Length: 395
Image 1 (tube, one colour):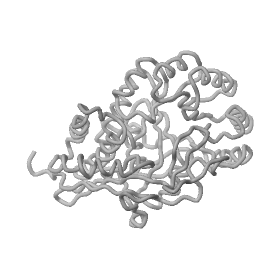
Image 2 (spheres, one colour; image 1 turned 90 degrees about the vertical axis):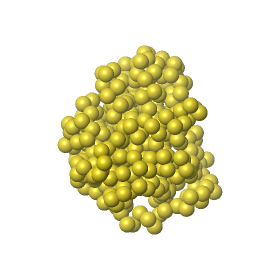
Image 3 (tube, helix red, strand yellow; image 1 turned 45 degrees about the vertical axis):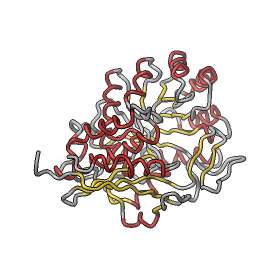
């Protein structure tokens, strides 16, 4: 295998893109942005950044070819960059990027004996894994989707995620606007359903009719029994799925909800590896899995997707806050799976951040168009570098 380019350098960067309105919509009652630039949503007690924060990874081969990756960096991104700069990067210098899966497995092995098989450590691996795959594709002149077993989808159907209007009437009008553009699937977020979760589902169903698919993200707000009662109230409005009904670590609760309701459940954005998915799959805690590329990386994403297929479950990937590089990776991986009917479309993030990348990737008329060219088909635009955040600084 001599003569093929090897990994020569691994770099990480924190990007903080300003927003006029925080993710999920305007601040709710009692919510405020603290001195570090974060806010806690009262609806689900979860912390969010007031900007679009992400961690970029640049891997340079010894022939000068560059692969780009990105990982989940919306909170405490310095934890991720420290792991990349101090641990992961130096270890993979000299490796062959064609060994992408082996590299991912080797990095996972580095810290598992110490109990680091999740969290920031695996997020760091995910971003590096994406960059290695991008480099691999560029070096062999092929799109990543072709390296993952073959391309099944030319475009990936999209569902609209989030209707950040100030009132139910505003949210309904926003959804109607997307229907006019060719979209027919919508998810709203219980964390900001200030008028009531059931009321919002009822308003959308009555206002949009039976021709659309409706979903709700419950944001881990409820106990298992509370979730069962709520889903029974939602059932007359025929939700396509209900997401995250109870706490992500509550396997027994998830299994109880799955066994107690007839509405499809979607879970998985928090889990990073097949090892975390397996017990939920075995307990039939859901019928739809939602791998988040910023947590999994490409190598684990594909393993999760194929394991879900063996359990006859659908894969509808989650899409979080990011510049767009791990979104591109998620689309490549989704297009290679046999059981992925659609992908989340975070329009308030995806559309506004396209100006910071160079890519043919887009979402219109209800579907994503994959990037073009070798590798992932996406790179940071020059404009993004003005939004670099110094490591250790606040947003």
